Length: 219
Image (cartoon, rainbow, N blue to C red; front, side, top):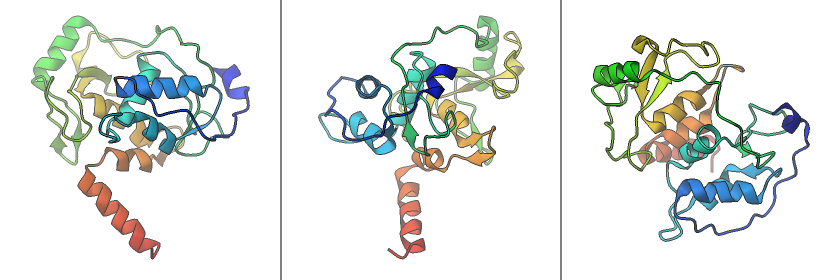
């Protein structure tokens, strides 16, 4: 990882496409593998993520990209990882996958207790309103089926050794809110990730933000 950071990023430019793989995640993976060491923009990733049949860009593309990091073990860097990247720029320095290993995982019995407490629903709370999406339901915002996974109540960077057998140290989150928790706030810089917040919002809110910005810039 450190060696990868030292390698200069190649300027972004045109990319291959369109990508026709069967899933959003596989289309984004193909894009990065075609452009190892090259800077990719948010717009280029969204274009690759488009459904080849409908031409629509899925709301959950950012979640699928996060899975390439966490589940597949790829190194995908952003402005948080290296100073030569701007916000909404990403780079895969190498196609080599990391070995999963050191991250603490919840114990089976504790996870059952968490799901019981959560009534098999996402426990993310925003402004006193709970997400409440249940395992297997359709996510009306992010798209796809809900899959609940265990999340450290305290950030992993703060408490990497959370007790795997203590259900009170964990919570059940849907995939979209796993991503949002990670991307809403960067604890190392104290800055909000505004792009992630807007991306996670429903289309109605996106349009309201768009109208606000047009009015703000008098366009």
